[in-house]
Length: 119
Picture (tube, rainbow, N blue to C red):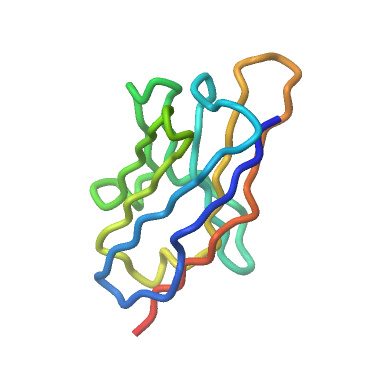
């Protein structure tokens, strides 16, 4: 099972941009579907964006369409989330998730990186 570590979060003013990074160790993620999720205090964790193993297809939750972009570099074993035009509703802990294509393998989750949008 791969291990995932997120980075790039922080405190940012409304309208600003951040780029989150998810680094994989302990194995390759080239066959994994990868995704970013977020969880705000008192709310359920929600899917933000996902990307297929070769990066040919991406999906976004409606609230981030046009502002966020998910990408991946399989050679570097990294997944990114570029976040633009951030607003207070984007404040949350952001998690990276990897889904193995092999039946029975557990999903991999990182520990999360906090994003706080505030003036």
